[in-house]
Amino acid sequence: MLDKLKIPERHYLNNGHGLASWLLTKDHKRIAIMYLISISVMFFLGGLFAVGIRLELATPQGDFVQADTYNKFFTMHGIIMVFFFLIPSIPAVLGNFLIPPMIGAKDLAFPRINLLSLYLLWFGAIFATVAMVSGGVDTGWTFYTPYSTTGSNSHVVPMALGIFIAGFSSILTGLNFIVTIHRMRAPGMTWFRLPLFVWAHYATSLIQVLGTPVVAITIVMVGVERALGFGIFDPARGGDPVLFQHLFWFYSHPAVYIMILPALGVMSELISTFSRKTIFGYSFVAFSSLAIAVFGFIVWAHHMFVAGISTYAAMVFSFLSFSVAIPSAVKVFNWTATLYKGAISFETPMLYAYGFMGLFAIGGLTGLFLATLGLDIHLHDTYFVVSHFHYIMVGGAIMGYMGGLHFWWPKMTGRMYSEFFSRISAILVFVGFNLTFFPQFVVGYLGMPRRYHSYPDEFQVLNVMSSAGASVLGLGYFLPVITCCGR
Ligand code: HEM
Ligand SMILES: [Cu+2]
Image 1 (tube, helix red, strand yellow):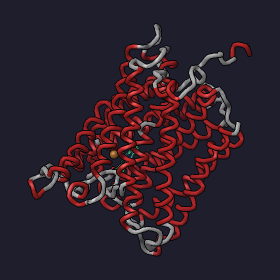
Image 2 (cartoon, rainbow, N blue to C red; image 1 turned 60 degrees about the horizontal axis):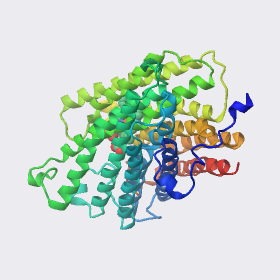
Image 3 (cartoon, protein in one colour; image 1 turned 135 degrees about the vertical axis):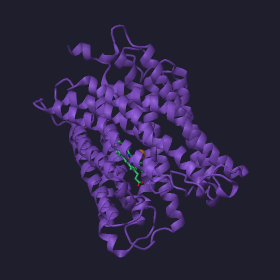
Image 4 (cartoon, rainbow, N blue to C red; image 1 turned 90 degrees about the vertical axis):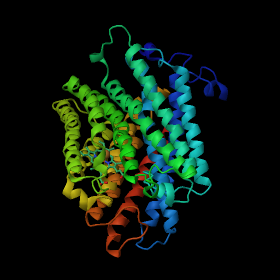
């Protein structure tokens, strides 16, 4: 038995050493590891900007940086985290590593394109870095026009180019996964035997392929408008600034599901493994991923209730937004049913999974608050929204990523992490996260708008709680770096 578990003498980690053997590899596992390193760097960088934001908001006055710098902090934080960390995270690292073995294939369908995807991400990151070091961008990650086209004099064009290029990385990864899952399954690996992790990635890939080109072209239009002064979005030239929001959210609402769906897939694996049961209602969970992907495309205008769309349109989009909650709830209910009477254990990945379930539920439910027209008029562009999406993107997507990374770490590296420290880190992340973001629901509800570098004194206590929580959260994220390298 033990013999069987021995790692083969030659494996992907020692099969060739020098830099070139990595940079020119077509091995999905090596590419996954390079993604892991790349996006960890991005996560760290995005985290530094978050530190800047929380330092500034620790006091009511703009004491730490100027308003202008603050705008650049939150813009860069958002852009890096969304486009260069969260979107690639689980698919590019865990998906790349695990999808082929999970379906019984040797590699992805297009190994060279897989490597190209990684290079495109790097290439995009270089442009983004150029934009950053040459002075930064202050438009917010959403690039709303007309500010991004005619107002801002920051480095919008190189940043837009960086995101455009990184977008192709995402499209090609999605395409690669779709073809792989269709064509490369081992005999007998039917669709309804696919692990739920693979189903989730299939649904994610559909969004990547169908949605990303839209944002790519939109971003090009912003660049063109800035550089050549076309009147696409500029009302003075007959353009329409709200058109930008339609195009942007047509991608960016589904994009939030690019970030969360893979985490939902990880969750399904973790829950059934650590409760030692098969997942309850397999086909419901599989189809709910597809349903989320499809519904995700018809709710974009819930970001625009106060942007001047008609009341009728707003009502329709409000109604449709509620429908997205159904497949998400199906998953949570089925996980709960899976846990029921299971032999549940409390290893690190499962701690992340518990955290995920709670935080994702809060994030999703507050989404329903926001989808409620009357409430959104009050809550739009307040810290309530910030808290909502962090509960899902950080509390959900990153918890799923961390849980998955711990779960598959031994398989990926042949080493075990320190269980003791990893549990402490998971708990720190959970506590730190809630301390950071729960007060933001309150302060947002009380009326604190987002994206301002100063605020009235009465909001300070809640903001100090947030900043303190962010330190705990940061420590929680950093601990695994130390402990996994120490063993
Ligand atoms: C499941 C994963 C979800 C993620 C990752 C997510 C993420 C986000 C993000 C990033 C924003 C802010 C965009 C900005 O910068 O302005 C946002 C806003 C919003 N979300 Fe979600 N969301 C999710 C689920 C939901 C659900 C299930 C609903 C409703 C059923 C919902 C409704 C809304 C609404 C209405 C807004 C706009 C609020 C406003 O700006 O007034 N979200 N979400
Ligand atoms: Cu949305």
